Image (cartoon, rainbow, N blue to C red; front, side):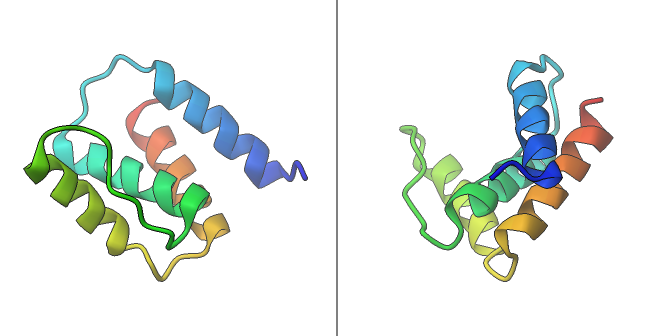
Length: 86
């Protein structure tokens, strides 16, 4: 089902994936966490990567969004991308 929100979310993801702007770590963590909550919900998975501390920060940021629905997380993700990357 392609709702307007899903289309905007995919466009924001594509834009963010191609962006070359270096963002502060807290913004990058927020973008990561909103994306994970939007696509995986509360089905937590260990982040990829070999740096344990970074993985802990990623997982913690995601845990903090457990109260959001997928649609709420998608909208917040779109808002962050629009604010910091466009």
